[in-house]
Length: 123
Image (cartoon, rainbow, N blue to C red; front, side, top):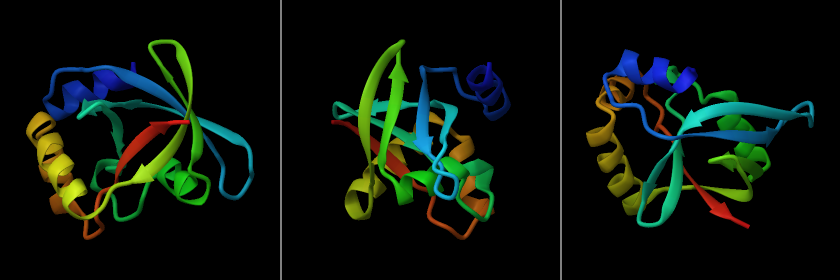
């Protein structure tokens, strides 16, 4: 339900969603979140936009502390390692993502932080 609501509110056609389980950076407890995901160059990525808020969302903060996580994609469990993109790689992916999801342009204008583009690499 979250993904279609996000899509409708931000003006893009709903795509696939995954369920990501991270380890809470303070509690150590497994935390889950449903996220839209994108595939480019055979890589699966998620975006930590947090609606353009000034701070990263909790799942991003959790991955920065413990990059090992579990992603459920099409009901299939995958152990993943979160790799935060940077430099030219991030710029290339970010441009593609903004073309696909116009709201990311707005989110970028709302914040001074660099919105994370995270590649989920299979372990």
